[in-house]
Image (cartoon, rainbow, N blue to C red; front, side, top):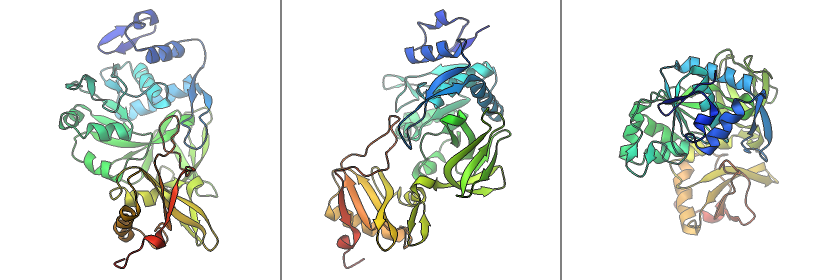
Length: 361
């Protein structure tokens, strides 16, 4: 018999939920309880146009059970849904609750997921598991009232984008156990976690195991899923077959003078020094093969501010990591899920670093 525990009430048929769940959640539940063996989902669009794919319900149940086992989620647990169920992360929070018979607590999807309504009404119940994207955590921690509400959350998983060094530092000040996730739509959510402020390596959940291909990219062996084996474009440093450190995307690796540079690792060194959005990319170079570029978003960047930025970041980077040029664009392009498209806009303006140097450099 169907049973959905939602916001303190138990529902045993879809008709009861029609007026109580928002339209997006209701449509997903309607799809989940139909006779098909799959639900429709979309890839994130991080490395290309989003694609519609069929997500096996059996795989989703297996993934939910694996996560529930790790976090000890059961019928007494409460799970917070603050992500859109249009994407796999939101869908899987619902499935975890259904598989465990746990209660699902829903709030409006926003950059302030611990607010219920208005400005001053906050989540004030124990939450055993919540999932957020880094932006939601960042915004919530700007308000002392919201920051205190993290004390109600036992476990928080953060995914969809990398967790910055600065955010990881702020997470030390809350009692919640926080984890970064590793996974993709094709693996129906995460297959590995990294405990923040604890270990730089991701560890496998359940019976998942890891290996590498000839490029140094991660291969996931996931016996709980029907496909069982997934070859990724993520370059990693393996620690046995159960743990790895993520280095960056194979697609983005820069070969400058025979040195392999990982843009994501360079970005981690700069995140505290650059206000606003930025990313590291490259362009062809006759001498080096590829030269490093630092792309900056915003109309406020001018010659003087870029000179000051160069002074600030030069001590932070290695010889080959230092950008050969800054590239300024008023706005970055984004995927449908809000991730920055790491290609330079046509209206970008180039500032060669050698023209920015001043005598004290």
